[in-house]
Image (cartoon, rainbow, N blue to C red; front, top):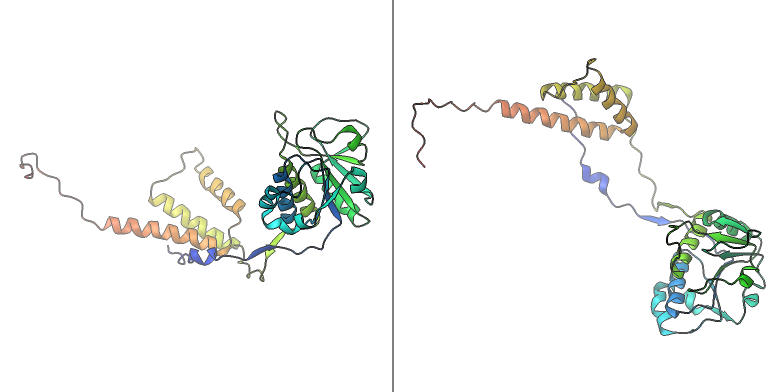
Length: 284
């Protein structure tokens, strides 16, 4: 039994130009309260740039502007250049509708707490109606109770309960990523999707199973169960779960054909002649 030659695998490895879809600007700002390390401000600017946010407000930063912030901003230098510095939280959120505060600690049970993903969806929905603020506290102490009182809801990032504290820039990156996804950002091919290869038909899969059963018999790989059917039944199940297309089915059959050809070639080689016990050994 023969099978069509396997397709050239390299044809399936051509690079595809993948890029995120373009999404419109959104009125969501990141507010950092009393940030201690200027490098964190730069890292936050970079994280925001990654996720398509541009509004950064600093409340009483310890050091800003600062060369370390500029160095850490990298490609987010434009976000850093447009930073607004204010002296109190009230000024940072004065025009905001929804205010979302971040915290890693248990707080007042009367304040609603949302998972980061749910909070991101809510922030995106509210940003269609007016400005939204995401509040982040000092690296060491976080947001105070008075600062949390300005928030409509709290946001929690699921993390290892034995060590749930995140670096400021890491927290901003995670939350802005969820905001980016909530805005509908996905990845797609920049070009038209190549014509899809159809799934292998039932008849093609039956030919594959017959071919596979023949090769298993030729190499002596037999079902050891009482019924003698479990092996092929299990093979059928896992291949059906894989949903191979026509090219993939042909690749498998090409491999099986190569195995058969190799065995036939090996079978043509003459068997070595057995030496007589009286025959002297070959010289070294």
